[in-house]
Image (cartoon, rainbow, N blue to C red; front, side):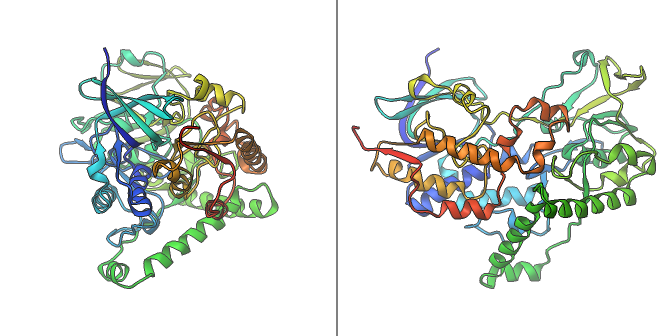
Length: 511
């Protein structure tokens, strides 16, 4: 079937999360440019993030309504302070909790999109299927499809910006026999709202951020919860004080107070980066966090689980879990935790390595996500694909996390080794193309190689080099370091402020 050809548009943004929202808003604020379109496969702005259990910035908060029906529309709460969980140019004085949950986050996204007109440029239920660079016209032909009808489209653009996010596609269940199970098998990211769990026997597979939300939420409503864990986590307390009306009034009407507090948290977070360094200072940081995690676990969890809940790897190797009540829920009579491997699933439950059978009415997969946001179907100069390009580097990488040499006018919003401030960096290098002063811009290959080498050298001095055996997930990643930032954000923000980036090569119209 021939795709329907849509009219040319200068800029296409893929993804309607925070990154795509920021990109659209800053195009208007900084370039006074509004001739763009934003595509997202979800039905609304932020929906992909807010209905998904995302472990780095947002995780699922599942609420159980009367009758045992799960309501996942409230979606997620954050594990960073609310004052910092917003765009720097659009602070939100209305968050009512230190760690806000989905309704407030969604309201913030929608109000910010409306304020900067991003909502008028957004088209939903549209999947990005790939793009091909046209050297003759210095443009991208972008392939799209309607997620509801399957209709295929193509659209030509000058600048293509990917803000698809890193944790959006759930890991498939590869346990033998899963298709034979007679009950529902649901991933936390795709929980059907009609599912009734009242009085049911539930098996939960996994113990990361998603599982630690699910177990305490459903435990009071089900007959039993049998949770199967693979590797332990570092748990930390997660107090969530209310932000009262007086403080919200101050944030709204007293100049610079909210900005000052935001910068204070920024510097606190920068200081904690020291824990990732393989140095005496880093070791001291880790010992303090280790002590806090051990103390918290032993204060909350039943003693019978201490041994399997305490990690045997360096803190920092995996995302720490800010506990929403999970450890305390393990004290319930109807909750059981084990680290015995599951060998198969049959029609009525799961079977472990010892041969024990655990009956289940519902199986919940809290098994994380495929790290696949960079595996885009892209064809650049000379027919080069991202896979072919990255094979020369030994893994996924991008110059300053935003660009790769064979792909002119293409930029990552949340690319490899990503950091704060990439929207401004993209505007700086793509601005001349967007304004029509040059035809295209691409990173110079030697600069990309030098940047990659510098990143990997820095990462060799961080805790992540000793994390390869943490879990099967890490073993499947050829380059865990590609998804990790080795330096503090101050460093990257400073580098982004340089007016001219000599690593980028521009070509004039007709060249």
